[in-house]
Length: 430
Image (tube, rainbow, N blue to C red; front, side, top):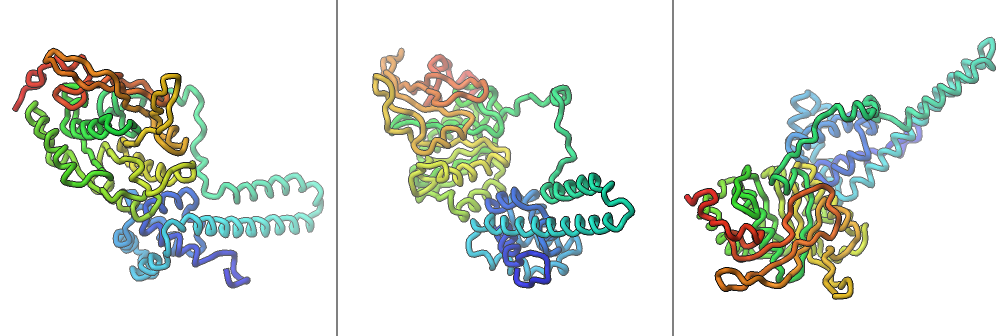
């Protein structure tokens, strides 16, 4: 604010806030938790804020060109300075991650303006009452009105029209049906972290989950399920390495009658890793989510999603916030992570919880780790590798994840009781 004769405001802060929203979905999500349109001092900025959010709802992320088109269609583009002004807003942004900081400044100025206005109204009513016949008789009413004015400053644009439901009203809504991605295994929006030591087969299991869900086959059996759109984001392996692994699984799926639909499985290889604490990488990720609209996203391993150790909740917060953006788009998020090195119990078994901040343990609905166990001698005379799927946190819902997995069946990992099923009679090879 530079002019003392004007109400408190900062055009620079408003421009920086809107510029961050125009280029970063991550920043926009945080800013919308801080501000409403009415917090902006300049009316044009209120219109731009509303248009940006309409674009985010329609396209899944910000887009300056689409924002200009919406403003033009509403007849507001010229009032907002035209398309060049949107480019000016973007140019003011030194770092999109600073957008929430500027949003707090905008909110602070807005609250101050409302407080000043409320104070003027309170003072005006006081003077008017003092000039009446009996000012003492109006004290209670003036006080109540003043309190309501101040509460209105606090609650500005707070949506308080929806009443808190009673137990009867709450249970009158029947929406308990599961929105299954894999019946009794994964529901839309679930978050899962799978851990394990080196060589336990967790990456193989991750690829198996992705491919079978895309193909329309239960991950641990041969029963058909509805094929889903799956996005694999591999931040460890090269394209060549991943292609070898997926080709074998894809060929096997076709052999047993589950060819993958052309648009069922999408692949992104980022062997250089990512940094989900950086706005640029979060924007890259959300652009793919908006374009592909996956039902399931497998991503990891965790240590490749940020180029530093995640030892505190503050360090974990931006990574988990970015992953929650995926979930907010209606997808299951399956995260691969390495287990900790510590040992537990008298036997000294490895701690299967993910390395790092305790926030990682509280984030998912389901947390499982693969633990090697003694191989089993099969009917073919070979020793079959076995792992236990061990929970390292309490499940938030009842699901039918297997307790033991064994190699040697139609898929790399199967439940032992499923190994006796002939893979070619389960659905019929094509």
